[in-house]
Amino acid sequence: MKERLIEALQKIGFPVVLQGTLLDASDYPDNFITYFTTDSETAAAYDNDEAATAWTIQVAFYSNDPAKVESVQKTIRATLKDAGFIPQGRGYDMPSNRADFSGWVCDYYYIENEGVL
Image 1 (cartoon, rainbow, N blue to C red):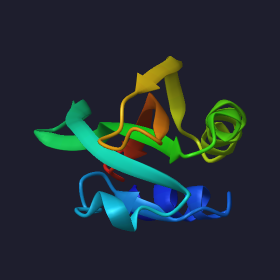
Image 2: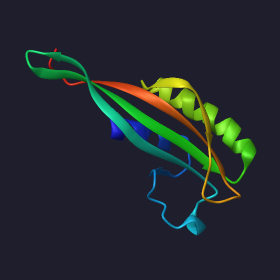
Image 3: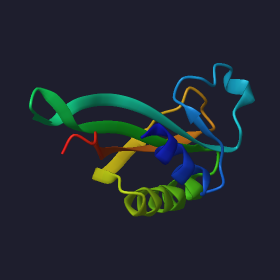
């Protein structure tokens, strides 16, 4: 699932990093995408084995350009939908630990078939 997510996000053309791994705020690129897995529950089980996992992934876009925050979040949504991710709502503002950056975040579900069916 993470490979599929990262591969899809990299097509957008901005750095893609795990949320929280850019430790020094002075090293932020002008624009970047972060992801963070918030849940991975069993979505289906048969014969005492997992058949599907429902992943919940939080995807955020940060930029020092507010206009890009608005436009790129729409591109991220369309790109991830095309890759099989299901957006949960439209997202929400995400603060940054730098005053010159803003962000937008949305949660996505991804149902992974475990091959048991």
